[in-house]
Image (cartoon, rainbow, N blue to C red):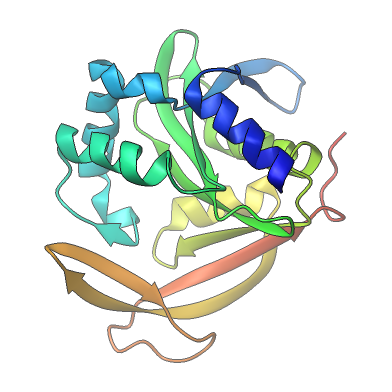
Length: 215
């Protein structure tokens, strides 16, 4: 874990470059993953895209709030770049950024695949599936994790389909409980198979490094 965290730090600081090709089933490169780095705090175009996408798709997140450019920068500076074991990749088709996908809570044993977003049209219809597969492969082969987790709201059918197409299985259902803190709405996962007071649920998936064909 220490060596991979050093690598993440080097990438986020801009001292090391990281690009991951997005490859489809025909082995054709259809896009590129490029991590957000400290220099992006000054990139108004990227900040604007992240803010707009978050606002338009707020209901798909377990934490919901009104996004602004200032808040996006604050989240990048104080959460994304400061928390260990976390990285968010921008998804490019050609020169156009069309979404993002990332991970957090990386340990030597497991990690949470997180924050999938297609913000713009363009590219392959299954672009996020292939982007997810590319990150999963990187996490297994470079970060050497043993298990990757995913959490998807039970009413988000497109994300459920995407998650299973990436290769995740072993699904469990968890209630989510709503709370509001400082104008933010939080949905917290409860105990597996218990009932939700709000009739709202989240599925947890995982895949191990022995279950995925990385060839």
